[in-house]
Figure 1: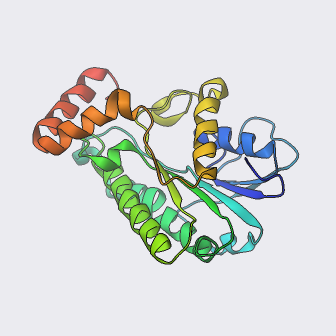
Figure 2: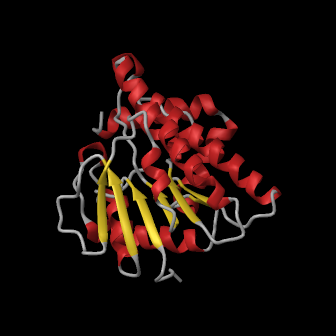
Figure 3: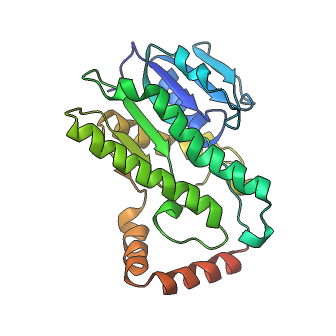
Length: 243
């Protein structure tokens, strides 16, 4: 059950899964969206927007949310491309937004997590962070960094005697988002967003959508022979029409 008195902060909430989550949370409380640009849809009156680029040096904006009890981070960038075709600027930008930026945000709220007061947190990671991902080398590396970071913090929290956890949401490709050139479709993203919120409120630490149907076998193959699975992934992306 989502607290009606709470204040939710959604970083990257102007589109895709972040927008769907922000709109659902706005049905039961105040929401602040932080993103580079504002959503192109009319937001409810209890949703505020603050422009911010995760490439900025100064993250002090995150110190002002003293009443936030739910933190959702869905901001991220990436594109299918061979490493040789990525510029150094794209490399730095991807790591800054996808991993370093997320770590810095959580640093500003970590004292809230390391508390006996309930604090709920979700980070949108990616199944690419669990295995080698040709055409997604830097993107996958940024998500792998997040995976290990979240797992490590969750252990530190538990060993410190605290129940708060960070939920790692690691899907494959997502329908209804503008990632990889798609379009936002809230009818497709809302059910997934609802499930994320429900798991976050239960303080779960990992959610891999379609795990039993798809990714259990994929991860088994990867752990059995990462070279063969990497080669399969390369050919799959090349033949998918997405490259």
